[in-house]
Amino acid sequence: MTTPDQVYKTHINASADKVWAAIINPEFTRQYWFGNVNVAATWEKGAPWEHKGLDSGTVHHLGIIEDIVLNIRLVLSWGNPGDDHDISRVTFTLEEKDGGTELTIVHGDFVDDSAIAKRVSGGWPKVVANMKEFLESGAVASPGVACQHSAA
Amino acid sequence: MKLENIPQKELEKATKGLHIRFMGTDDDAVFKALADASRRELLDRLRTASGLTLGELCDGPAMTRQAVTKHLAILERAGLVVTLKRGREKLHYLNPVPISDISMRWIGRFEEARLQALFNLKEAFKENDT
Image 1 (cartoon, chains in turn purple, yellow):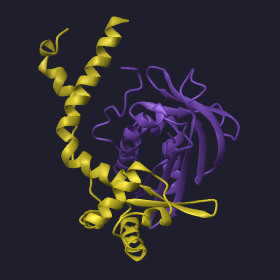
Image 2: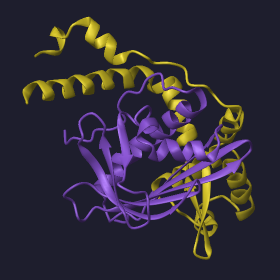
Image 3: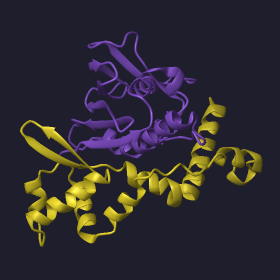
């Protein structure tokens, strides 16, 4: 059965360059993305990237940077280590609007009956909420845990 | 190690920091948008089959195209529905963020804390085992 795309949108009272930094700068990302960061040897189209636990070093997700336009758009192929089948695509779009930035995250192009789709649907709203709180107030009061990366 | 043997301090640490997230000024728009059965029905349909065209959304019982268009406009202004251009089509998607924010604020707090605490402890056990 086809797996539908997921769309997450929020308005953040911060400039686009700050939202951008929150996504790709580990120094900021770790403060709200549940201790995880997005890293790449170089943030360029075609280069590989990883989503990993900063302390554990465990790679939770990885892929290729498919498109990158500074402060505007970031497109990543998204998969789990060792899984060549359940691969999807995440697109971050940033638009400066109403004194802040409208952030739209589309996680889609899933395979049929994708298991990843189910797991991330619980995590993205929390990541978005935490990112917004971090950028607007400088900190996240309850960093907590978004989703289970390890198989239960 | 049984759950009841976990020191109270550890449990408290795991659930610490629950707080009230700042609610934006758009919350009235969200609640008003949700306060209509037809609009909730549209959201239900988008939840089960995301990425629907206007035509597909009108393809149901008891709602004229005009009514669907009106309701979608309200839902979009409230941020509950997002439209994306895909080729020549305009597709509608449910944006769960506003509802998730509400849920995290009031409904999820206690249940989530309990689940979070259990998850954190489980992770701690795994570390102890390795």
